[in-house]
Image: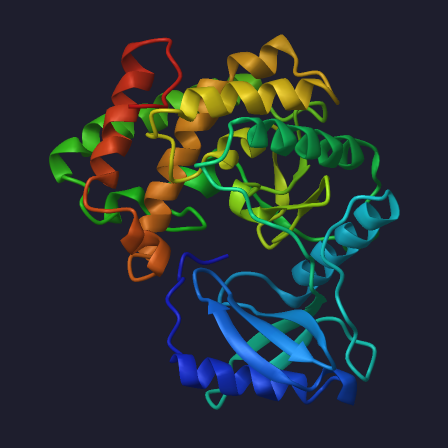
Length: 334
């Protein structure tokens, strides 16, 4: 695993690569491509035969082909239980994960998915949307706890070391834009305390397993009363309540963040119980996620998402770390 996240291809080059990928699919899937976003992977909208599809071109130096196949295996298992999640479309040779070779010999993986209809809720909606998010997350966790992954299943590991250490998957938090070196000590102290807390908490199967790991409102779709989940690209092994922390990624400092956390827990508890031991870890998991996203900012500073967060985002991260260290209050909010 590497923290290298920079994409070297231009929009034109990535679109040409997407067109190459489409050539591997049957004729009904040949159509018009529109680049939707390049935050992590490059995602395209494909219009073909009067239908819509989503083509995902994976970024380099992140997931192996085996890991992407494993993601699709979990999606298939979830779909069998009635949860609406993305479904991959096989190419002409039956392969669901394509591998394209660039001019320099490096591989790029691609997956074509059926389109999922729905409206994406935002932080401007009623906080009850977080109850829906909590409910669907509990259903995913219930499935994870009882599902036996097939032989060869590989997914990314999310723990203290891989999230916030010097060698984390998303880089170093010290490299975040706008983070004053004078404040490094506050964040470092928080990282040490988080590590101590999580080491004591442990990774028993009742609290640590296969999770979505990025289940925010932006990865939720609401359609005719049904809640649908998309973007399992970061799914892997982690603490179940990390999915709560991920629910408010980037906006932990929002004035209503504590209300969102409360509503998420309320929704989750309608489906599954959160133990007292897990509840006690919520502040630690919340601030760990914020520091993880601070590292993400350092390796994704040129993305539209990072630029949209404004010049004071790192200052808010330091403020929340200080709150975590100095009080028992949730490290969220204004």
